[in-house]
Amino acid sequence: MPLTDHLDDAPLGRLVAMAGHLATQRWSRYLAEAYGLSPGGAAVLMALHSDGRLLHNEVADRCAVRAATLTGVVDTLVRSGHVERVNNEGDRRAVWVNLTAEGSAIAAQLHRRVRHRDSLTSVDADPSNEAVIRRFLIEYITRLADKEENDSGRRGPGPGQEVPEDTSQRGRSAHVRG
Image (tube, rainbow, N blue to C red):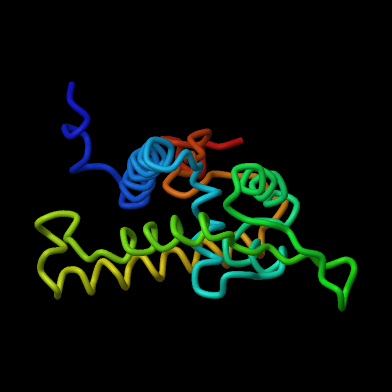
Protein backbone atom coordinates (compact mmCIF):
# COMPACT_ATOMS: atom_id res chain seq x y z
CA MET A 1 0.00 0.00 0.00
CA PRO A 2 1.53 3.36 -1.00
CA LEU A 3 2.56 5.82 1.71
CA THR A 4 0.13 8.43 0.42
CA ASP A 5 -2.89 6.20 1.17
CA HIS A 6 -2.54 6.99 4.89
CA LEU A 7 -1.74 10.70 4.78
CA ASP A 8 -5.28 12.12 4.63
CA ASP A 9 -6.13 10.69 8.05
CA ALA A 10 -2.76 11.24 9.72
CA PRO A 11 -2.60 13.73 12.61
CA LEU A 12 -1.03 17.04 11.65
CA GLY A 13 1.93 16.52 14.00
CA ARG A 14 2.68 13.21 12.30
CA LEU A 15 2.60 14.89 8.88
CA VAL A 16 5.01 17.59 10.07
CA ALA A 17 7.34 14.90 11.47
CA MET A 18 7.20 12.88 8.24
CA ALA A 19 7.84 15.95 6.08
CA GLY A 20 10.76 16.93 8.32
CA HIS A 21 12.21 13.44 8.18
CA LEU A 22 11.99 13.22 4.38
CA ALA A 23 13.35 16.75 3.91
CA THR A 24 16.23 15.96 6.27
CA GLN A 25 17.10 12.81 4.34
CA ARG A 26 17.12 14.72 1.06
CA TRP A 27 19.14 17.62 2.51
CA SER A 28 21.65 15.21 4.11
CA ARG A 29 22.16 13.38 0.83
CA TYR A 30 22.66 16.66 -1.07
CA LEU A 31 25.18 17.99 1.48
CA ALA A 32 27.17 14.75 1.46
CA GLU A 33 27.27 14.49 -2.34
CA ALA A 34 27.86 18.16 -3.15
CA TYR A 35 30.16 19.22 -0.30
CA GLY A 36 31.09 16.20 1.80
CA LEU A 37 29.27 17.81 4.74
CA SER A 38 26.91 16.55 7.39
CA PRO A 39 23.80 18.59 8.22
CA GLY A 40 25.55 19.65 11.45
CA GLY A 41 28.59 20.84 9.53
CA ALA A 42 26.42 22.80 7.13
CA ALA A 43 24.56 24.37 10.06
CA VAL A 44 27.87 25.56 11.54
CA LEU A 45 29.02 27.06 8.24
CA MET A 46 25.69 28.82 7.80
CA ALA A 47 25.73 30.09 11.40
CA LEU A 48 29.13 31.61 10.71
CA HIS A 49 28.14 32.95 7.28
CA SER A 50 27.07 36.46 8.29
CA ASP A 51 29.79 37.15 10.87
CA GLY A 52 32.66 34.96 9.68
CA ARG A 53 33.53 34.16 13.28
CA LEU A 54 31.70 33.46 16.50
CA LEU A 55 32.53 32.09 19.90
CA HIS A 56 32.00 28.34 20.16
CA ASN A 57 29.03 28.83 22.53
CA GLU A 58 27.44 31.34 20.14
CA VAL A 59 27.70 28.84 17.28
CA ALA A 60 26.08 26.19 19.49
CA ASP A 61 23.23 28.59 20.33
CA ARG A 62 22.63 29.43 16.67
CA CYS A 63 22.66 25.73 15.75
CA ALA A 64 20.34 24.88 18.69
CA VAL A 65 22.74 22.30 20.14
CA ARG A 66 24.82 22.04 23.28
CA ALA A 67 28.39 23.30 23.09
CA ALA A 68 29.72 19.81 23.86
CA THR A 69 27.72 18.37 20.95
CA LEU A 70 29.23 20.94 18.61
CA THR A 71 32.84 20.05 19.44
CA GLY A 72 32.98 16.96 17.20
CA VAL A 73 31.33 18.80 14.31
CA VAL A 74 33.85 21.64 14.58
CA ASP A 75 36.71 19.11 14.81
CA THR A 76 35.59 17.63 11.48
CA LEU A 77 35.29 21.08 9.89
CA VAL A 78 38.78 22.01 11.11
CA ARG A 79 40.24 18.82 9.59
CA SER A 80 38.50 19.53 6.28
CA GLY A 81 39.78 23.13 6.21
CA HIS A 82 36.37 24.83 6.45
CA VAL A 83 36.90 26.48 9.84
CA GLU A 84 39.68 27.19 12.28
CA ARG A 85 39.73 27.60 16.04
CA VAL A 86 41.37 30.66 17.53
CA ASN A 87 41.91 31.20 21.25
CA ASN A 88 40.21 34.23 22.69
CA GLU A 89 42.96 36.36 24.19
CA GLY A 90 40.51 38.10 26.53
CA ASP A 91 39.15 34.85 27.99
CA ARG A 92 41.26 31.71 27.86
CA ARG A 93 38.16 29.52 28.33
CA ALA A 94 36.46 30.90 25.20
CA VAL A 95 37.39 29.82 21.68
CA TRP A 96 36.53 31.56 18.42
CA VAL A 97 35.38 29.50 15.45
CA ASN A 98 36.38 31.26 12.23
CA LEU A 99 35.40 30.48 8.66
CA THR A 100 38.31 29.85 6.30
CA ALA A 101 38.14 31.11 2.70
CA GLU A 102 36.97 27.65 1.57
CA GLY A 103 34.38 27.46 4.34
CA SER A 104 33.16 30.96 3.51
CA ALA A 105 32.67 30.06 -0.17
CA ILE A 106 30.65 26.96 0.75
CA ALA A 107 28.63 28.89 3.35
CA ALA A 108 27.73 31.49 0.71
CA GLN A 109 26.59 28.76 -1.71
CA LEU A 110 24.50 27.09 0.99
CA HIS A 111 23.02 30.42 2.04
CA ARG A 112 21.95 31.18 -1.55
CA ARG A 113 20.40 27.72 -1.90
CA VAL A 114 18.49 27.95 1.38
CA ARG A 115 17.26 31.49 0.72
CA HIS A 116 16.05 30.60 -2.80
CA ARG A 117 12.29 31.07 -2.77
CA ASP A 118 10.92 28.44 -5.15
CA SER A 119 7.63 26.96 -4.00
CA LEU A 120 7.85 23.52 -2.45
CA THR A 121 4.35 22.49 -3.60
CA SER A 122 1.40 23.88 -5.50
CA VAL A 123 -0.20 24.80 -2.15
CA ASP A 124 2.54 27.15 -0.91
CA ALA A 125 2.81 28.73 -4.37
CA ASP A 126 -0.19 30.80 -3.30
CA PRO A 127 1.22 33.61 -1.09
CA SER A 128 -1.80 33.57 1.25
CA ASN A 129 -1.35 29.82 1.82
CA GLU A 130 2.38 30.29 2.33
CA ALA A 131 1.70 32.91 5.00
CA VAL A 132 -0.61 30.54 6.93
CA ILE A 133 1.84 27.64 6.63
CA ARG A 134 4.71 29.90 7.72
CA ARG A 135 2.78 31.15 10.79
CA PHE A 136 1.86 27.58 11.75
CA LEU A 137 5.41 26.27 11.42
CA ILE A 138 6.96 29.19 13.31
CA GLU A 139 4.48 28.79 16.17
CA TYR A 140 4.97 25.00 16.22
CA ILE A 141 8.76 25.26 16.16
CA THR A 142 8.70 27.92 18.89
CA ARG A 143 6.36 25.81 21.03
CA LEU A 144 8.57 22.73 20.60
CA ALA A 145 11.73 24.70 21.39
CA ASP A 146 10.14 26.23 24.50
CA LYS A 147 8.87 22.82 25.62
CA GLU A 148 12.30 21.27 25.02
CA GLU A 149 13.90 24.01 27.10
CA ASN A 150 11.38 23.49 29.93
CA ASP A 151 11.41 19.68 29.74
CA SER A 152 15.12 19.08 29.24
CA GLY A 153 16.01 15.77 30.74
CA ARG A 154 12.48 14.34 30.61
CA ARG A 155 11.67 11.55 28.19
CA GLY A 156 8.46 11.17 26.24
CA PRO A 157 6.97 11.22 22.76
CA GLY A 158 8.80 13.35 20.21
CA PRO A 159 7.26 15.77 17.74
CA GLY A 160 4.59 14.12 15.68
CA GLN A 161 4.42 11.08 17.92
CA GLU A 162 1.08 10.35 19.44
CA VAL A 163 0.69 9.90 23.17
CA PRO A 164 -0.73 6.43 23.78
CA GLU A 165 -4.27 6.53 25.06
CA ASP A 166 -4.98 4.87 28.39
CA THR A 167 -7.29 2.04 27.42
CA SER A 168 -7.32 0.25 30.75
CA GLN A 169 -10.82 1.52 31.61
CA ARG A 170 -12.21 1.72 28.07
CA GLY A 171 -15.78 0.51 27.75
CA ARG A 172 -16.36 0.25 31.51
CA SER A 173 -18.82 2.54 33.16
CA ALA A 174 -17.90 4.33 36.38
CA HIS A 175 -20.17 2.21 38.59
CA VAL A 176 -18.71 -1.09 37.30
CA ARG A 177 -15.08 -0.22 38.14
CA GLY A 178 -13.55 -1.59 41.19
